[in-house]
Length: 320
Image 1 (cartoon, rainbow, N blue to C red):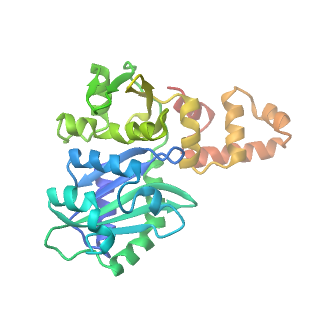
Image 2 (tube, rainbow, N blue to C red):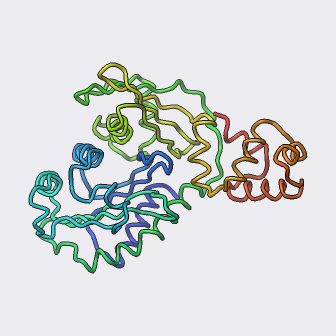
C-alpha cells in the first residue's frame, strides 16, 4: 500500500465516526518526535503547514503536540467558539485563509509513545466538531497508532540500491532555503509521483527537523521510511543558519528508531548489536551468558518482527 492509499484508508476509517472534509496524517520519529512522513488531502497549503510547524514547535497555539501527549486528553478541537480560542492564530488566520472553520487534532499514542498525529478538518460553514466527535476520535488514538506502525513496518527493510551523493540544504535564519542539486533530488524522492514540484511542496518535509533544531538550539534528527530504505534527515547549526543533510541512514543512526518501530525488546536489541559485530550464535551466548537456544529464539523473534529471512538480509538492510 502506498502512503497516499494508507492515508485515504485512515481517513475513511475515521470518517465513519467523525465525518470530515480534509485530513493531514503525520508519522513521527518515535525517538526524537520529529516528523518523518506526511500525507494530506484537502488540507492546509504547504505555506500554512510551515506556519503550523513554527507554532507547534514553540507551543504558541492551542492543542500543541506537547499538550496532547501530556497527561490529559489526546484530542483538541478548534472552532467551537470557546473563549480560549479568541487569540488562536491557527483558527483566525491560517484556517480561515484556507477555508476551514473547524479542526480536530488527535495524537496517535500507543504503549506510551507518540507515533503520529491525525488532523481532521471541516470547511467553513459546516457544523464544527463537537464534544461527541472528540470522544469518538479519542478512542481512535491507540488503534490508529498501531495501524501506522504496521504500515511503516509492513515491508521488510532493505538497503538503497543507488549511491547518490548526500543531499545538503542550507536554511537561513529568515527561512530562505538553498538546496544543492542532490538535496533537491532527495527531497523529491519523499513526494508521491503526482505531487506538485513547486518549492513550497518540495521543502515541506524540511520544516519539522528545522524547527526542532531551532527549538533546542542544537541538532535534530529524523529517520524516514522511504520507498527504497531508510533515510536520515539531520539538521545542525552553522553560524545563524542550519545545514540539513539527507542521505541513507547509517546503522548507528537508524537502530534506535528501527528497534522502536519493530517492537524489539532490550534483549533483542543487545543480540542484534552482537550480530552486527559479526559474532556467531554460540559466541553471542557466551558473551551474554545465555544458552544457545535462547539466543536462537531471540534471533528468530528479530527476523519475524522485521520481516527478513535471516542474518544476511537483516545486516544488508542495516548497511547503507
